[in-house]
Image (cartoon, rainbow, N blue to C red; front, side, top):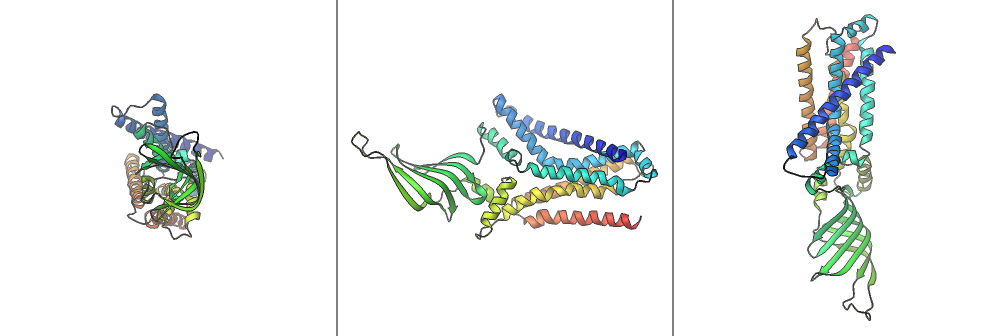
Length: 356
């Protein structure tokens, strides 16, 4: 319908303008804060800014939807289009539908983006470039030194406390003595447990008459007591973001092993539940917007609506940070506020239906 098309066109226009403006402000502020402190090559700087843009979108997209709805409604009021729609027989529910459908569609696309590590972990990648001037995944190709050993992990799965492609190099007096090679190791009770490993030992006498390198197979090895990479602590503290696949894989692996999975639940709630505060706020604020500028000062109302949105978003965002730092449970910090918003939105809808 032409009316729906008209509303959707302006809603999407304001949404992209607001999201782009907020994203550029966030990225520009980040870039200005590091000028003079860190010098990066042009290619790494570009990658850094792209990842920061992804992170800004991850943080600001939901609230941009609410701002876009407010802007669209104000535009419809100022141009008297809203009054015209009502005079043609359209109800508030009819005008609300395009906002709801588009908001939900964008939120579902937004959630799907978290299947990509480049989007879900963009802030980690950007900080890794900023700190180390290297374009590396913080969970791949890791190399550590620990006591007299050097450890290489081809890939670390922090949620499962597991590493793949393990190499442990033991050196003595600056000379390599042996290498432990394993497909997988798991951290538990202070040790890294390896079910099956090959140990390559260098001969003491390096000559043409020596036996050469010996390879021994071992089962159920326990190595590296006390070696716990910082990444595992960061996961436990909830300071790392994860893709949808990572979170579900860890949940299925650990749910029956008597291991605390609060950080995993928090990550899933933040991906699948937290973004829906935006469509719910769209519904709540929609019914407070006046029909005509004759009923209320539009500028004052716009200021109040934007300020209220920022305050609510700030509270919800603060609660998600509390969840990350284990101050409150994920159910209280993420699920409960969304349920409250849903009940308020449902009450507004029921109130409207009873008066029509």
